Length: 204
Image (tube, rainbow, N blue to C red; front, side):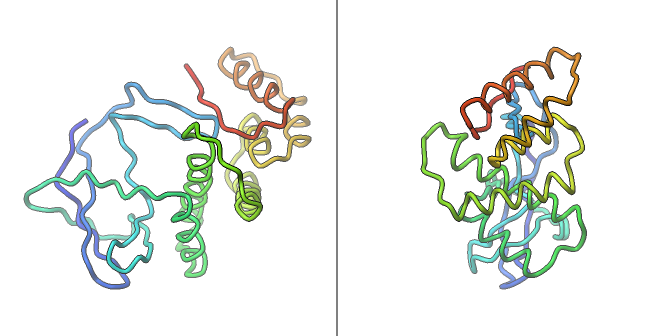
């Protein structure tokens, strides 16, 4: 991994600047892949698609920003959001409106991953609030209908949002020959037996 000069973002609401990390190069050595399609790669760190202004607290999409970099100095701030922050960001950005479907897909996938980060990926057990569960469910249905075409991934997302019967029906109609996919299907089936909605790490 080779970091670049700090990228300078300008808040579209208050006009204040924020510096975040930029990358010249990276790689996926040592990466973890999770069942919700999140990849965690130490040598290719995620820089948040949505940023929170540290001055006014508003949220904005990084890709809408002009590419502007510091002449000297580096930042290792990736601007990653917690799930409570991501809920605020999703509400704000939805009310403002997305410029295109890809923006909405990216933000909704961030929300999906942030939920799993907060409730499951840390390994610390938390009681899921009914409000968060409903938001996660509705967001998952949107992603299934508008993004996910692979049947195994559809089954996994249905499992994660608690629609276990639908997940089973999909898996019953799927035929997989690949050993890697067989492992994933078997793991999903095992978790469906106990109504376990937690994401799991996929080992290649």
